[in-house]
Image 1 (spheres, rainbow, N blue to C red):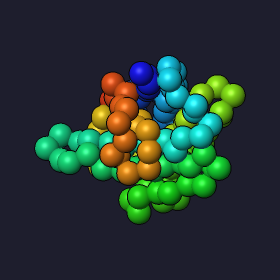
Image 2: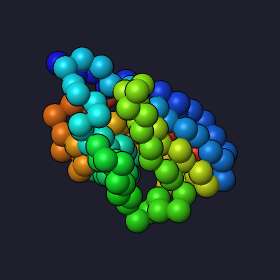
Image 3: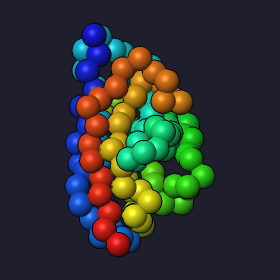
Image 4: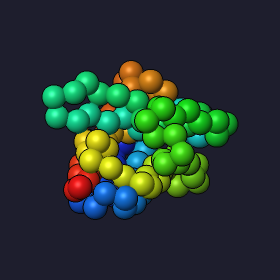
Length: 117
């Protein structure tokens, strides 16, 4: 089994920043796995925000390019999502997921991000 635990969400004003963390544990060789951040807003489908491969290469959704940065610390089994320039459309529950396309087997419980305008 693999456990993913997200943290760092909260309420922030438009234009503000948050840093999300995803810590992995269990039966996973973390450094060999791609990890993605996905989000789901009320009434909308879950969508990919960003992902990072084992080698460190990254992929971003167009709507976050230039604002969000994904990174990883393999020594801590942790992936981060630095979110700057937040706007109301970024309000969602953010999840981390094994893999690159929000289709991986393992999910965290999610962390709520709410941006007030």
